[in-house]
Amino acid sequence: MARGLAIAAVLLVACQGTEPPPASQPAVLPSGARSATPTPTPKAPLGGTLRVALAAPIGSLDPQVTGANPTVASQIFEGLVAPGPNGPVAALATKWLVAADGRTWTFTLREGVSFHDGSPVDGPAVAKSLGRIDDPLIAKAEAPDGRTVVLTTRLPYGPFLSALATSPYFVVSTASRMSGTGPFRVPAGGEGVRPLVLERNDRYWRADASGQKLPYLDRLSFTAIPDPATRLASIRAGNVDFVQDLALGDIGTIRTDPSLQLVRRPETMVLYLGLNLSVPPLDDLRVRQAIAASLNARSLVDRLYAGAATPASQFPLPTMLGYDDSVTEFAKADPAAAKKLLADSAHPNLDLDLWYLLDGNVTVPDMRKVAEAVAADLAAAGISAEPKTIDPVTFSASVRENRYPAWIGLASTAAFDPDELLGAFFIPKVGTTGADESTEAGGWINAEVSGLLRKARGEPDQSKRSELYKQVSKIVQREIPRIPLVWSAPPAAATKRVVNPAGGLFAEVGIGK
Image (cartoon, rainbow, N blue to C red; front, top):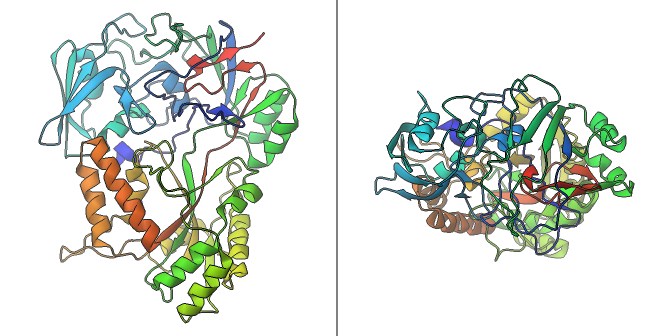
């Protein structure tokens, strides 16, 4: 089951809004996804070529091959569903039903859609594309008729729709592994050419809010430039129009360059403080409340992310199923209240080791600086935290086995499903007696939370799943086993000639004259 929601290292393409995003802007989501209603778009110039610098190799153009770049794949292919602002939304399927067994999913296919090779997107084609041998999620794919496909999962699995929206489950033509239904197509003989140039799909089924057929562009060109400094230099020199995954330290350069615009992408990562509840005095709720009240997430955003991130009020992200918009902050920053809580707990002079891991990823803050900033916040409330680091293998094993009292963590999402965060954090292992053990990486035991999360993992009704995750978030906020700090995404940039970089797909982007 792991592949469905642990698809490795997904690079997320969606270009949200230029800074600052408009207040009325609809949510734009990862991997080229969009909300059910296309983004309202100004009269964008038609035609032209958008040149994109990727952070990762292009890899195979078959989305079902390990190592295929989802940024590229999401321009060529689509799934039955796509990520939406509150869970998966219709794409190649217009509606779906799940049987009482929680395993049998019946999808009604969109009419009039064809692959780039001209063959129809019908039940048999979709069933063949998704009915692979030994798939970890799908046990059987069948086509009762031309407009219907029935997928049977191996077990009842609530995050199934979220998995179907990821590139390994994109629908591929039976005639050609390079042929999908997306806004751009691979030209004959072009799959091995670099830069990779994709052509406009004149058969594409989507239109913008005004009825204008998508995509606007004639061509989309991809070049892989692994070094972030070189990516920045390439856009400043005018060699590309859009760049992924720039260093946080380059945000100032982008903001001060009159030819560039900073592109705020959908937030897909959560920076958090992990706490080990099996270590006194962290087993005392008042101590955890004091730690939470010590932390100033807004200050972390301003100091460490150049303001290009958001203080986290919970673990589910704002455009994720299960996000609770009634919760505006996890804990109010109040050092005086923190000191009182510590005094009441009989631990007025709390000393902690605060562990972090250096990984060299320039799209997120230096974790040493994060640990120092967190330690400074704690110090203002009278808590002494000493930042410490060690090699990655020892760090991971020590966190997992609850050897550290506190640590800085960074979680990211691939399928954009809350199970990737809340389920991964708080569903404990079952011991040899059949009873739950305390969680790894936290030492928390909470039967109510584990029951809610297991129910959500097996619940096919997305609205019911959402409510279950909201219940879990409220318990996490009350019990404080971990503290969410910052939501973020790797920064991106576009030249000022790029029109509407808020579009979820490059199909919705125009090139100015």
